[in-house]
Length: 491
Image (cartoon, rainbow, N blue to C red; front, side, top):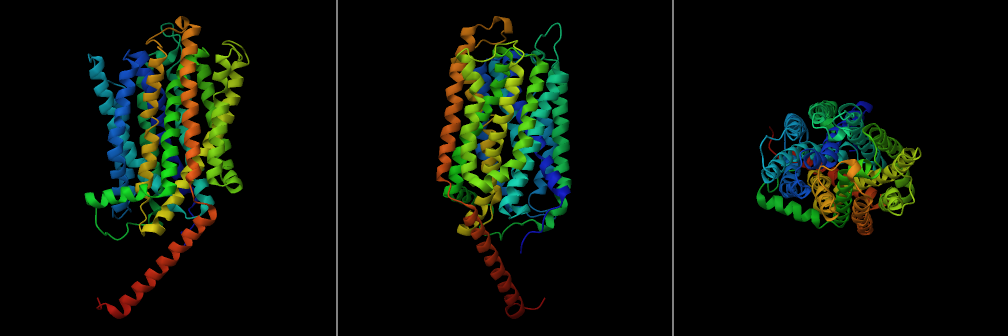
């Protein structure tokens, strides 16, 4: 039977849950490297290397969480136990990340970063994977899924950039001791506590707000082989045999690495290249909120016009070329100089359009992954949304792992110094940073987008998959009724 439409409140609270991951992404992708490298003085290679190593933890933990979520049975379904259980640990580990013990050496600090980042990311995965896996269970409508992910991305952007803007405007204001407030260690105390509170609140709102939807969600399939290591490996290998999933996974790893690279270096460019103050940087973060507000309603329209795959590809390539234009023009001495009154408006306008194009690409790619769930179910008979969205979580974690590692390598290769004053940054330092960053960012996005050429699912094939599954389920219900009426003992 068709899934009944979700209510406005359920749709809204489902979207609000993305604030948690948005806050974590803002903090870990943008501030973590800056905090440990420029505020505490830990070498960038150690910080980025420690965070990159957490990908090994994600590679094991994320598929396990997704598979465990698929196999769970409870009175509140198979997703909500993870949502509620992740709230307190995620908030607590997030706060601890900004309070390292005193007296650690650089290598000991690297071990601390690895441990606390791993715990934070495993906790957020325990929320993000099951909640994302609810999308194809909330609706089987091709366009509605894109609208739901559009709403979720909008709230994710609110979490990321709203939290960033507020922090720059309130916590990281300039002081006589710190001309650039984002380098003030005192600001990170309130930053940590507010981030933890927002994470806790948004996860609980998502859980309670969608709890009434549980009777309409798809529950665990028949036990089959159970949660054995063999069955777990079989599900993982089965996912990687799906051509649509492989295309999304390849694009996802590269695009989220590029996003992580951008997030980890954007404050470097704003602080040391464009020489912006904290208030100006706070204003610039609103271009992403504008971008998300534009992208959420446009994403389903573009997917209806061009198809989800083509929309994701064209928007990704066009968006990154536009987004890199200020840096390319700066390297060529053709862009507005620091202090020019047109610099901030130009950066804002370019950032809003670029951000909207990237957001449309991301929304459509997530919706494509939801469509892969039915495609896989048609082939295997198993609805393992948790497995596929575990892969999506892993891809996103790449933004804080491989992305920050790439940022650290860019900083090291460009020989950008630690704890450097803005006035001490020479044009040669600036050009070295730009020439190492631009080709890496462009290459990751363009190569990833081209991988989507191998994605085979269209709207027509998706509708056919849904009809096949409905037909199978109807036949199974009829068989159950016949068996119960004629072949089973009375109870």
